[in-house]
Image (cartoon, rainbow, N blue to C red; front, side):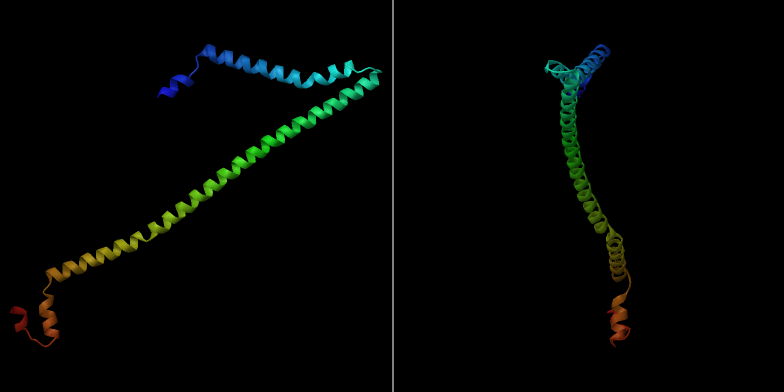
Length: 143
């Protein structure tokens, strides 16, 4: 509950944060676009030379941006792979739990059979039946 108060922003703070974010985006855009033409303007020579320098510097900036983007994509791919491995481990444990749970109906039926057999032994006059089978006759059951 303590984190809620620290992360909540009022409407004024939200607008200010959005405005700062927009300003930072424009500054970042200007910082990435303007160096090529400015440096090309400082190079001595004809307009064609300056345009060539500007194009070359812009190509370098583009390559740098692509390298940064590829690095970010590589980190994201690695994070997804880690999460996929974690999901696979969770799935393995879930399957193992399902296998362990699959034996429960068998053990429940077996315990019911044991309970029924115990009740039958306690309640039914089995001793008389066994002595009759063994040749003791009916008198052994009453003794």
